[in-house]
Image (cartoon, rainbow, N blue to C red):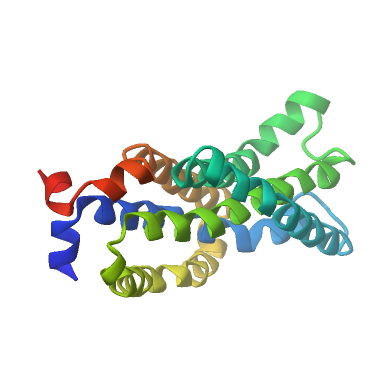
Length: 212
């Protein structure tokens, strides 16, 4: 594993992007809890939030697939990260936005506005589910693809337990620091993604050439 990451810098950078992107897992499990406990959303809104996220995820799949062909897998990957970042930053800045727009900390329409966060999250999830796989397929040598996929899953797997960590910290630090860490991690992911080579360039370059 270490040798593959050293030899293929584009793959190592890809894994770094994916690792930083898992910062979204710190925040998303608590969006509904935040809406009900802080914004005063009724419990029934939870179903609406989930429906909005599912709706945007399913309906945007054809769009992202088309953009992979029209633009690139990398463009879609960055767009997905940007959506997650926009949602995390939106939740973090929401208290100030509400005061600015209404003069109240929690106006009556705050819970409805929060649905936009879930819609954007659905877009980001859809883009990532398509582009993360297709980009790796583009850069991995054909005979080594099982190794590339397997190593990436092995390295990234433990990070998907981050919600357990943030759940343990929630009572200690509150929502804002957790959302801030998630937004920072996603900003890092986007910055790293901007350093990735476009798929067609990556596919034509050897690991050794990119390592130099």
